[in-house]
Image (cartoon, rainbow, N blue to C red; front, side):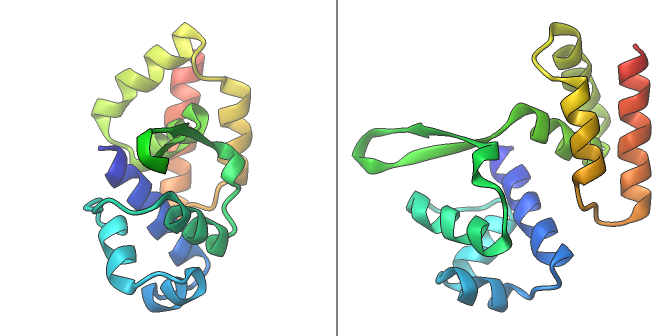
Length: 142
């Protein structure tokens, strides 16, 4: 599930910048095959510097990821929970709403931060933006 969300993030950022996969792959110094698999949520193990290079080529702020080091120099990147919430609101999947509502109720998600990021996020289109903002407004109202 996280691989799919991460792939969606890469794809949306790439499309928002008007880049083709080959252009982003070249800018990041990775193969188009690796980039394609990441976007599809079907990654094979890659070094974390590959992910860093892709995100840097997209201009993504790496401080919004939580890096957890593993053995052998590997690391896992987790999207900040508030950014994950924006992604879930954008996707509009009904099953995500329970996660979002529970996170807001428990204080694990910050309504002011989500609101700010909803304003600053580049959405696929206006319909996606309106859907995300509407769902958030409903959840925030309780």
